Image: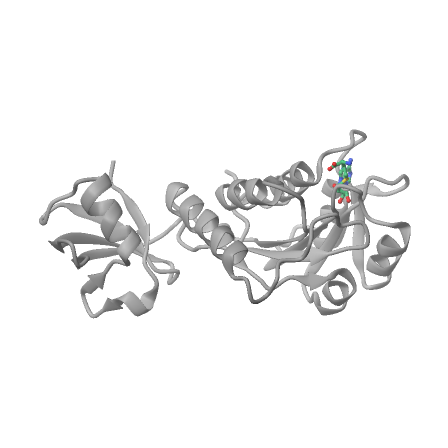
Length: 248
Ligand code: SAH
């Protein structure tokens, strides 16, 4: 099995690749790879590269690009999940699973019933952890791009700023199934991108749903059972990608 690594473009100069210290450690001490052996890297350009390792020592690891090819695994419909902050590892779990399934971005949201504290913008620890989770999940699932994690924003601002076709899964009564709403909104066309607004452990308030509706964010049902927030986000993502053939 060929190991895959995300390498940001700034670490690739011409054909020379310079792995970051954590990756050098993994190559050298964990995978015990030797110069001459090959790995695959991707840099968010939509290409992936076969790289032959050259220097692997205490200082770090370098390699040389030998071949490149287009990555075919990115979904055609770009789904961004606007997820109310969740407590504990639930948000981490969603980042990993939704990256595997094909989300292209996450917008952490502060909503009325959020119990989780918004991350302190100066304390980058939580962002660093989130970033590691999506990079690792993108490498493992052979994605061509690492999903973007946006700065947290509050619900009202998210409703105001969203430009794309948007849905708000809501467990209340009288909302149409997501599948039907997708048909109604797009017909046989495929949208370029979709936004999904998912609430916190306590759900959305009726006022929040009303505000979303006024901003053309369509309330939809994910069925009669009440899903945990992270489950709802994953199910909504799956319905959208399956609807447009991105899970074929
Ligand atoms: N109390 C549970 C469920 C909260 S609902 C928990 O601890 O997670 C969390 C969010 O999931 C809701 O705001 C809504 O966005 C979504 N959701 C859950 N079940 C749903 C359903 N059947 N239809 C539509 N959205 C749903």
